[in-house]
Image 1: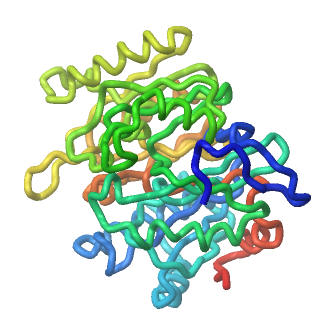
Image 2 (image 1 turned 180 degrees about the vertical axis):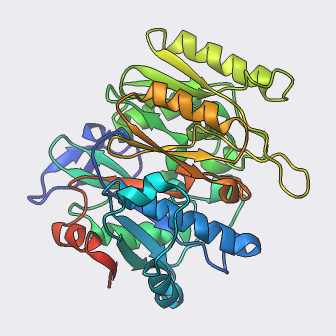
Amino acid sequence: MKSASDALKDASKDAQTIRAADYVLLPEWAEQEAVALAWPHRNTDWQDNLNAVQATYLTLIDAINACDVPVLLLCPANEVPSVEALLNTPRYHSNLQIAKQIIRQMVMIIPCDYNDTWVRDYVFLTVSDNEFNYPANFQFNGWGEKFDAHLDNRVNDRLVELCQKPVVSYDFVLEGGAVEIDENQHLLTTSSCLLNPKRNGNKSTQEYEALFKNTLGAKRVTILQNGRLQGDDTDGHIDTLVRFTPLMGIVVQGANNRPQDPHFDALKRLENELITALPVHQLYSLPLPLIENNRGERLPASYANFLILNRNILLPIYGTLEDHNAISVIKRAYPNYEVYPINCLSLVQQGGSLHCSCMQVPEDTIKQHLSIQARSGVTVYD
């Protein structure tokens, strides 16, 4: 496996050598042909609220299909028959917006083992050389060795079989939720996540900046110093805090609705940091919900943890008074997008939300016959 500092990787049909720096991470609003999820089952951390979270996943799958995008659903082999049956069972949708848009079920089940369902952080990122798309595989170690991830770290060995082009692999730890990029290759991330020494030792921010430029084609890197939500095992992933819009906007998880909240000062500093770093961008501040578990512990509920999907926004809501305001902010930030609110209260019980649970796959990444299969009802990849 090549080091991120190594320049060359054979990644084209005619064995043409491409420098790593020629690969560019695609922004999330690039056209997508699929979304990857991992089914929550009784041998995952979801066992205590399995019914609730499976219902949320079914709603999420239907919402993705309503956007005319198929789902690549990771699932242990012994769970496949029951999941097939569940997916083929007619279901009522309280979210009429989703129900009206669903044309057909489009789910390709991929038998695969994994430790965790938060695929955002271990399923491959997609990079482009302006001609072809390539799956880019980084190392995953359970958010700095907090959790067992030995199965998660092998998932891409299975998934890259679906891709048109060979995998480009790097031997340093990077989670998909830790980076946000726009069409100008301005990459955002957070120091609280990067500087956890259990990820990549004592790499400096300057070394990380060089890695992002070399592996993800970043032309500018901003490493934010403020933010992080209580209860967040990721050490402050950017996708819980700050998101780009395609219209020179920046969406931030604020706390202006809760001036007495423990998060208020840090999130206000984050807003000021963004104003300094991105002075020409329009800032859109989201309200902060207050969600606790049944032990009274604060959960890292964020409205910034949404998925951008082919001129649609799948937005997490939590059944709180702030939901309506959050929807309004997102509609202003993405005026040309349809917004699908999805109740993710069950997801945040395990410290994540909607964006954490999925990974988008851009158009022209999957082999054509498999892309066609994924759009052909509920099928199983073998």
